[in-house]
Length: 412
Ligand code: UDP
Figure 1 (cartoon, protein in one colour):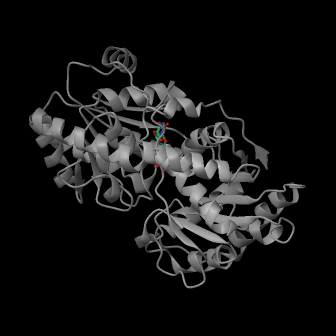
Figure 2 (cartoon, rainbow, N blue to C red):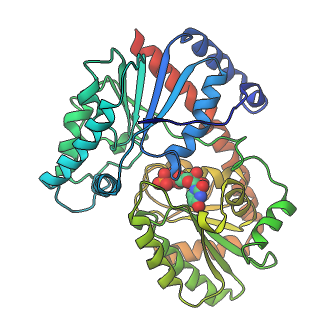
C-alpha cells in the first residue's frame, strides 16, 4: 500500500459556488468530526472516475480541517487481470470465477494488508471490489468503522462473483452504492447508503476555459474548429461502447459530411484490457481521418479533456453499463449537450429531453446527434438545465457532505 500525494485545495475558493445550506452543514459536520482520522483506499491514483474524485475530495476535505489520507493498494498484472474480470462480471458479464482467480485476489489483499502497521483510523472507506477483502485481514486489528463504496453498476451481477464478494462486504459497517437499483441482495449489508459521485468545479478539468483557449488546445490534435465536432471522453472499454460511437458517427457523417469525431481515452494503470480495446477501436475507425483517437500518451491531460468537453458540439457517453459516468456531469457543467446510454448513473444525470438525451441504440443516438447539431437553440436550453442539475446534485462539496453525514451516523 502506498500513500498518494495530492495537490492542495482551498475550501475558501468554493464559497461562491455552494449554497448557504450546504455550507452551513459542511461547517457543522467538519467541526463535529475534528480529530477523527479517515482513510480512503482504492486501486489506482490515475485513470478512471474514482481516482478523479479522490484527487479533489481528499485535499478539499483536508482543508476543511479533516484528518484524511488516501492509500492505493499495490498489485501486478495478474491481480489487475483478475480484478478486471471482477469489474466486468459484477456488471453482468458471463464467466466463471476460478479457484486460481480467488487465490490471486486474496493473495494481493493479504499482501497489502500485511504492509499496514499502526493505521489508527476512525473511518476506512474502501472503494470498489479490488481492495474489498482487506477487511478480512485488518478488521480485528483496526478499531475503525469500515465502509465499502461501490462505484460500479451491480444491478445484474454474475452470481458467482457477487456471492464471493458478498462474504466480504457483509462484514462492513456500511455499504455505499450510487443508486438503489444497483443493490439486489442486501439483507446482510449494514447501513446501506446511496451517494452519487461528483465533479470538482474548480479542478483543471472543470474550471472555466475561455472558448479561444480551448480551441487553441484542440487544434493541436488536428481538429478543425470550423466544422462540427462530436466527442466521447472515456476509457477504451467495451462497457463504454467506443465501437458503437464510431458507428453513430458513420451514420451522422452520411447526412452531415463535415462532422468530425474524437475519442479521448486515458489508459488506466489497473486496466490491462484497455490496450486491446484501443486497438479494436482504431481498427473500427480505419482510414477515416476525421476520426481522431487520442490518449494520455498523445499528451491529453485534464486541461485537454476540459478543452474537448468545452469545444465539442455534442458529447456522447454511449455506455452499455455505467456506475455513474462522471464525464456526463463534466460535459453538462461546461454547457455542452450530452447524449448518454439509458443505463445506470447516466439516467440520474440526464433527464431525457431536458438536460440531454438518453438513447438505447446506435440509430437513435445518431438521430439525436443530428437533431442537436441542426438545432442550436434546443442545445442552448438543454445546456442551461444540465448545468443547474449538476450544481444542485453533483458537485464535490455535496459529496463530501454526504460522507461526513455517514461518518457522523456511524459514530452514534
Ligand atoms: N478521463 C480523462 N482522460 C481521458 C478519459 C477520461 O481524464 O482521456 C477522465 C474523465 O474526464 C472522468 C474519468 O476519467 O473524469 C472517467 O470517469 P467515469 O466515471 O466517466 O468513468 P470510469 O472510467 O470511472 O468508468
